[in-house]
Amino acid sequence: EVQLQASGGGLVQAGGSLRLSCAVSGFSFDDYDIGWFRQAPGKEREGVSCISSSGMPYYTPSVKGRFTISRDNAKNTVYLQMNSLKPEDTAAYYCAADRVVLSPEDPYEYDYWGQGTQVTVSS
Image (tube, rainbow, N blue to C red; front, side, top):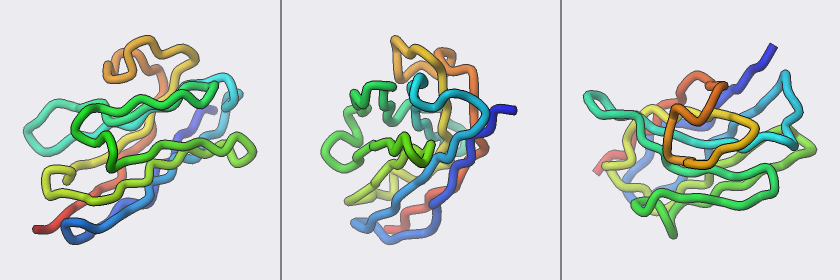
């Protein structure tokens, strides 16, 4: 059974940091691209970041320089380090996976999804 377990969300003040984790089981983690998406109330799901199976990162422009994605293949886990958080980063964050992701910002590229973890940034 494929499972993606996102965790690490919380309430933080603007300028603060959080680290999200996405623990994966049920498939060969090393062979999969892993993405992070977020969705705020009333808004569409937005691609935030992605890391390929080879470790190549992608960031949406609004988080570039503030967020860092990484993966630990030994732990089957992907991390999203979020620094200099802004109120507009407030959303439910989801991780997703697929073997080959050509358009990392497109949610339809991903077959597997985890549940969300809420990130709230207060001003």
